[in-house]
Image 1 (tube, rainbow, N blue to C red):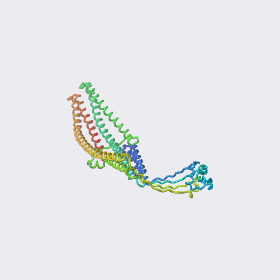
Image 2 (cartoon, rainbow, N blue to C red; image 1 turned 45 degrees about the vertical axis):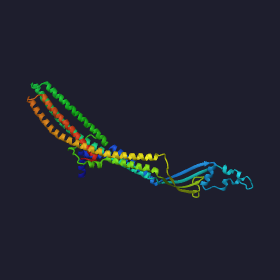
Image 3 (cartoon, rainbow, N blue to C red; image 1 turned 135 degrees about the vertical axis):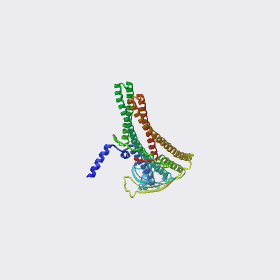
Length: 448
């Protein structure tokens, strides 16, 4: 009982603190609509593969023919099929051996039969025995298409994790910047109070107060913009997680630079895997096109029964047919060779695109790593400059109170402090963005 009580209290505290990054990542994996859509694509591709593999088992059809006719050929054929033909059906009742023109007699029973019903029930089984590897090639293509759909789902999952993590760290940067801006605003408000007092005592001018109020309005405008950005981030997180998000627990640590080589990224790259899979599809298309020069062999097995009533005397009237058929296209005006050449060119094109994708990603990795290093150096210097700008502002604020510097000097130093805050925010945003892109390429997921 004590355990469940502690668990309940812990869940309440977690909820009160807001959704943390680890919880958000679990929710996005389960609830994101785009990931669910990608999963349906995987299921669809799996069913397409099942359909392709089903061709190995042939096709069994039940055929039921129902007819009525008084056509001489049809009626006689109906009787033969149902094994009920008699010599009388040939019109023997009209034959007379004493008639010297017997060969010119038109048998009435054969030419003008009575109308007859025909019920034919049969099972037909067709099996492709040899297709010049065409069926196998189509099955392999379906298998590779399923791999692409799985890679698409993996890419979608990786993208949503990337976007969720980036949103959390963007929120952390916004809150850090807002904290600095509120410190600046508090200092401006304090300076505004001091200036009002100095105006009353005659030690300051009204223009000094107007300069402070103008700077305060500028800081308040920036704070309002960042607050709007926070609200937009919450809306975007709600979209990603497919539920309302009103409060989160932001990460309280710096984002670590992933230590991963270019070769590792190339091995794990989804884009390269998709390109290589597409190359296999092109190779199978070439195999399928080459089958144009090869024969097609199919087997047939048929079992039937026929009568003038449905399934009448079915056992006595049953029959079967078995056989094989070979078809071989000998000449097609050169279109077969053109189709094969076209498939060969498309395969070579895909090989080139695969290598181009590999080189492009390698170049992208180097660019990202350079941008991360540049941003880190910039952040290191800006933190020092920010600390110095704040100390200089505090110094000038004190000097102003002692009437040793002008309000204009104080405003300039305060503007420099504000500029460093915004520059640091921009640099940290750029560093995080490049780290997230690198992790996305390397398929590094989860809460780091």
